[in-house]
Every structure is written in structure tokens, then in C-alpha cells.
Length: 341
Figure 1: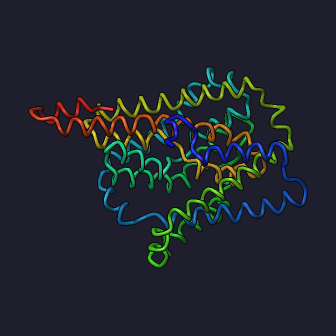
Figure 2: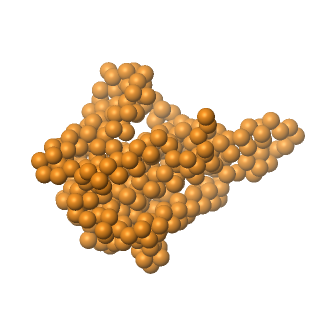
Figure 3: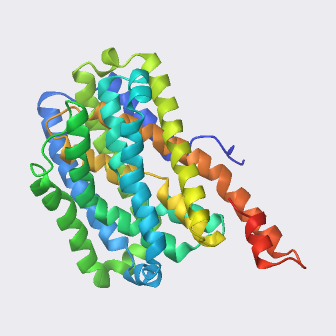
């Protein structure tokens, strides 16, 4: 039976179940302490696997396309935060202050890796460039996201802290495991490539554990009493606005700068998406002294919205490209114009 296009994927359904479990049976006391210790290990394992799975050859293959990468990085780390700040008079009344802090945190995060590459491939875009851009975004986010959180989130809300106050934790819990994975890739890279389907469950299991602990702490502090249903509805609207602006901007800018269709596809999918896999553990480290349930809630909703939108667009653009490449008697420019996303 084929899954409807806009039906949530299994991982999203499991995330919802994890939040529901934490709402009904949150961990407390000594159990919470043990789970917090386990999440620290899970965060390190998650970034170790990110490093081990990142192919240097694929990165080198697309690294020369520097103009494309600059556009993607500017969209990810400049456009999103600026939009989040500029639209504060519109966005903040729709959500609670804690959720708005989560929205700003969302705006500082790096792009996704796996799904950006997958959607670029489905849409017949520049896959090597997407691999390089998404990977570079994920790596640079280890440094840029904490700085942006300190400069933007802390200055606009009561959440967050000094960007330099968390740098040691970021280095030890995120960067060191990531570098360790890269160093060991020549030894374990073949094994990780052959077992990606198995390691995906390790990735997802780590995220689910972190989400459970984060929401347990938030529920213990009265999260659902502080977040009314109207705020959740407003949060969905906020996420749709952010994604619409990001996708529209990447479409317009990539066309105006003269990128071909394949490059446009890579820019759109890499420059408009945010990483749940990186965002959840980063929130755990950066907001160590705060209940991070409300911080990651906007990211969880944005994750599903971006997947649904991209799942609708990528096959459509890919099918259009196949149709136009079969067309005879048209110029290359006509093909590009006809298949513009």
C-alpha cells in the first residue's frame, strides 16, 4: 500500500509518540539523571557517526562550486536568522516567548544532509554539489550555531547564554566525536557505507532518546500548561511562513545569479531546510540549563512541514525534467526556463 504524499513518515510518527510518552510518563529523579547521562553518550555517538559517514571524495567532487555553496550558507546562516528577527512583530504574537526562542534557534541551525541530497537527486539536481553544501553546512553549524544563539536568541529572549560559555561543551560533545569519525573513516568507512540502513536506527534512536529526556524535563516544569493550543496553531503558521520565504528567496536568487537548473535545485533544497539530527543534540548542549522541550518543538514541526513540501515538489520537478529532456527542437535555454522550479 502506497503511503499518501502528505502522510507523516514513520520517524515523525515515532517522534510524536515519544513526545506523548514523555507527556504521560516523564522521567524524574534518579531516572532522569541516568537518562541525562545516556543522552550525553547518544549525542557523541550521533556526531561520531556523522563524521564516519561523510565521504571526503563526495565533498571534494563538489567543493569547487564555491558560488553555489556561498548562496546555500548565506541562506542557512544569514537569511533565516534575519527573517526570524525581522518578522518578530508578526511571529511573536502567534506563539509564546519560549516557542519564539525555539523559532530563533531553528533559524540558526545548519541544513539537513541526507534529505537534502535525496530530494536533490529525485528532482534531478546537482547531487555532488548538494552533498558538499549540506555537509559543509552541517560541519560549520557546530561553530556558527552556538555563536548565533548567543548573539540572537539570548539578546531577544531570556533563553540561551554567552556563545563562549558553551564552546567547550560543543567541542567536546560534538566536534571531537565528529573529527574522530572522520579520522576513523578509512578504517570503518566501508562498514558504515554497507550498514547505513542499520545505522539509521542508531541515529534515530539517539534523537528519540534526547527528545524524550528534553520533553520529560519540560513537562515536569509545566510545558503543556504554558503552551496553549492556539500557540501550537500559531507555531505551524510561523513555520510555514519561514519555509515559504526561504524557498522563494532561494528560487529567485539562484535564477537571478544565473545558475543552471541542476544548481538551482541543489540551492533550493539545501538552502531552505533545517536539520533535526543536528538541532536536537545541539539544543541539549547549548541550552543545558534550560528545559529544551519548547526549544525543539518548533524544529520538530518545521522538520515535518519541510519534508511534506519537498516530497511534493521533488518528484514533480524530476518528472518535468525527464519530460523536457525528451523534447526535441528546443534550445537549452528553453529547457531551463520550462523546467524552472
